[in-house]
Length: 244
Image 1 (cartoon, rainbow, N blue to C red):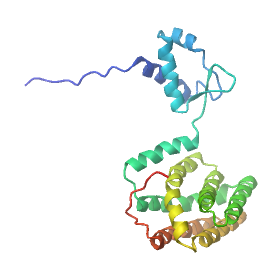
Image 2 (cartoon, rainbow, N blue to C red):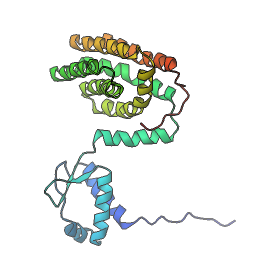
Image 3 (cartoon, one colour):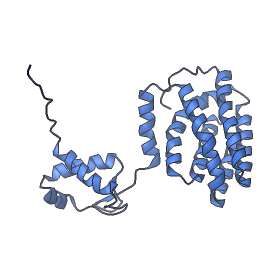
């Protein structure tokens, strides 16, 4: 019996260059804000054409690892923005046929302990942001788009108040997926706005008192209420999510 081997994958040179620069960035050898050498100098160092370097830098830029600052011809090391990273995860979840129920269950698992952590770790600045987000929601009136945006913003403020970037990044893709169904629910369920406002008011009070248990309890109620709102709005929980 003859033995067969898989073909060797020949990686384009620009990807090797991007991988080499990316490794220096991820290992913190190159720090955020530090400028990279000019394209011609990078081409000399790597022993490749300038066009290869340019393509490598484009790939790194698309990943958020480098950017060209205004007024500069050189690329600088950057930190991927949370919203951009989360958008990529959101798109992947959509392509994996995530349903409304999947999203709701994920929020049920993540958000209550996140609220507890926020009550424990919040600073006076965090509290001011949470209060401002809750007040902004109360001022939206009948504007559904603003109500949806402000509701999601409250969650983001709580994530920020944990001072745990892992938690803040973990919730962002879910919030991006939440907004379309939340928009339908707020439009179709008259009491949805008042119930959201009530939950957020209690969350503010819990954070003011740094009452971890109350924050977790009220967030759990808040998320459970979303499911009830979906049912009243006639949103099928087995429905696959779509882009906003």
